[in-house]
Length: 122
Image 1 (cartoon, rainbow, N blue to C red):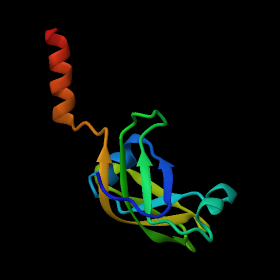
Image 2 (cartoon, one colour):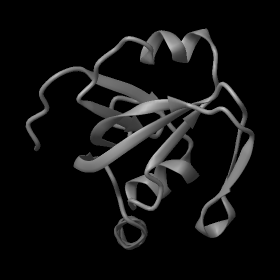
Image 3 (tube, rainbow, N blue to C red):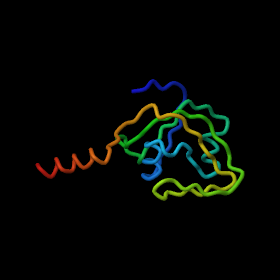
């Protein structure tokens, strides 16, 4: 387990972006502009971001370094491997991420299949 110092921004992701980010193929998180996100970013200092897939206490998560954020000035699409696409509008937040320092409760496909096979054998 990594030593985490400073404030941690806690965000929840859907499965596809979570998997891309956990595999370190997506290093930016896009969030809609608005008061809720602005209250969490503007004027705040974070050392890390904790991303969870779901709200359960045992949900898969990873923690990465927080580099900062910018506010988009233009409209654009960003397409990731596998077809996942993000549409960004002016005023949306782009959170810049560093290396992943901790992972938890993450089951890879091979491990998931092994668990399913073991349960069937019972």
